[in-house]
Image 1 (cartoon, rainbow, N blue to C red):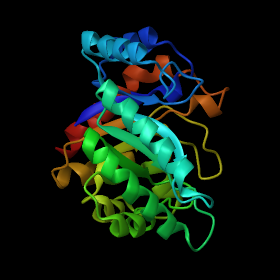
Image 2 (image 1 turned 90 degrees about the vertical axis):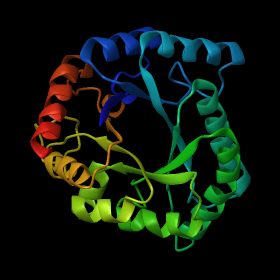
Image 3 (image 1 turned 30 degrees about the horizontal axis):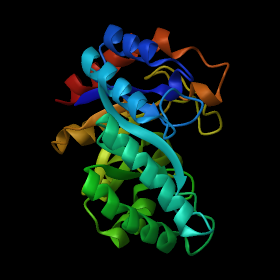
Length: 262
């Protein structure tokens, strides 16, 4: 498996610093938070997109995906949500990123149908550009069982799942259950660690309660060979220990889990 980290852990850091950290600490790739607060977002000009892609290529670091914020199951008009996804997909294509992350954000009993309709429409555009849209296990659809209600309705190869191990755990789902649900759709896996269900302040990998070993074991046993991406939510927890000082130990911890499950 390849290892990446999310720029959510180094909010606002310039690409030069992101790339320096990835290279220095032995990560294969980076998940870019696609937001106006960050150096990469859909408002970039064509020249800026070319420059960003070239920087990653020169450093030998892959852009795993763009972490966007469309809420595909939220009430309201479809078109603004679909357009937001299209903008992210276009940016991903220009940067050479294979994945775009979206959230559910459902609020009522129509959420599954709303999400499926929007994702199905956006999937056709994504297929033309060679980018895959991933629905994250999050908020209204935090478990694999929740996510597949939507993904099964979509039924398009360009729409898949992003497994956030914290949310499936908080939803009471065991790793083997999540994998069984998401395996036909799985794009990549976000790993992290927290102190408890009541305290989601990010911790060093292995320092908390999330079942990381079980998740890696399930993935390895089933021959899954994708990406593990460390999402350290520094942006939302300003008092958390800074990520740069944890990156090497985090990579080593994931390496041990992979070796132990091999």
